[in-house]
Image 1 (spheres, helix red, strand yellow):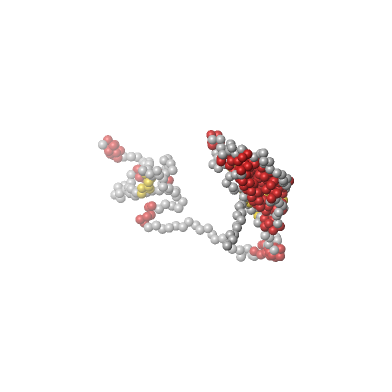
Image 2: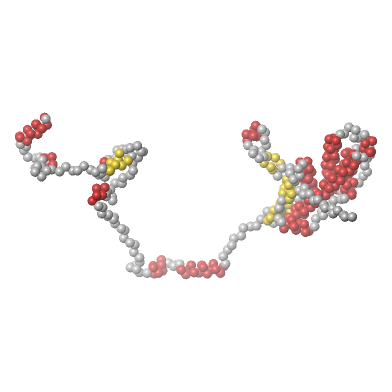
Amino acid sequence: MTEKATTRVTRAYVEVSAPYAPVRGRLDAELAFRVCEKRRAAEHRHTAIELADLYGVEYRTPWRLTPNWTVYREMTEGTRFGRLDERRLMVWGPERAVARYLAALPRVLERLEAAATRAARAFGQWRRSLMAQLSGYLDYEDASTLRVRARQFRTEVLGHLVGYLRTGAETGGRDAARPLWEQAATVAAEVWAACPIDPWEVTEEEVQAVLSGAARYTEPSVIEADAVDSVSVADDDEEEMPVTVAVLLTLAGAEQDAPREPAAAGPVRCELPPSCAEFARPANGPQITAGPTSLRRSARTRPAGLRIVPGGTGCGSIIIRHAPPRRRSLPHRPPTARTTGPHTGPVSVRASQTRRKARTR
C-alpha cells in the first residue's frame, strides 16, 4: 500500500514591494492585492489596515490616474481625472516595526483565509443537512440566492476573525431557531477556537531578511586627493611661479635675446600671360559678385571686359567680351582740334566752309 504525499499550496494574497529607507531608522513599502475579485481585494486590504494599526505602522491609499484622460472626455463622458486605488496600500514607519509588519502580513492573511474557508464549508454542511431542510429556511431559496448567502456569510466571518486579532473570541453555541447565515459571529468563534491565529508570531530571521533586502538612500561622497600629494604639488607651484615682476624679467633674459615676430608679408604679385592680362584686376580693385546688388551701380565699378546681363536666373549672368579696339589717328593725317584740345588761333575760311558743306550733306 503506497502512501500519497500531501503537498501544501501556498497562495500569495499580497505582493510586497522592496522596502525603501529614505532616512536612517525609517522604512517605506507598497502593498498590492492581486486577487481577481474586487470584493476579496477589499477584504485583504481591510485586514492589512487592521494589522498596521496593531503594529503601529502608518498607511495611506495611493492615487491612481485614469489612462487616456482628457478635459474633453471629462466634460462629455464624465471621465474622472483619477481615483483612489483600492488594490494598493502604502505603509511607512519605524524600521523594525515595518519589517515585522511585512514579515507577518502574508502569514496572517493566509491563516485568516484558511479559517474563513473552514467557516464556508461549515455553512455548506448545514445547508445540506436534514435539519435545515425540515426547518423551512430553504423553502424560498434557490441556487443563486444560496450562493449570495454563502458569499456574504464568508465575508462577515472574515471580518469577525480580523477583529479577534485584537480582542480574541468568545465561544458560544449555535441557535437552532435561526438560519446559519445570521450566526456568522458564532461560527467565526468556533473556527477561531479550533485554530487561533497569533499576529505576533514573527522570527528574528524573517525580520533581518526584510531589513537586508531594503534599498537605502546613501549620501553622495566626494573623493579628495591625498594631503601629502596636495602639499607637494603646492610647493612645486610656489617654486615655479615668480613672486615679483623684476624676478619675471630676470628669468626672461636680455631684451636682444627675445624672439622677434616675423614682418608682415606684403602683397604678392603674380605675372599673368598676355592672353589673360586683359581679364586681370588689381588686388585693391572692386570685387565682382555673381549678381548686381543695385541697378544704379556705376559702370566704373565694373572692370573692362565684363558686363552683367540680367537673364532667366534671379541673379543674372556674366558675359565676358573683348573691348573694341581703340581708334588711332593715321600717320599721314595731321592732328585736328578735337584730338589736340581747344583751338586758340584763327580758323581759315576754307576749313569752315568745308565743314559747313559736310554738315548740310
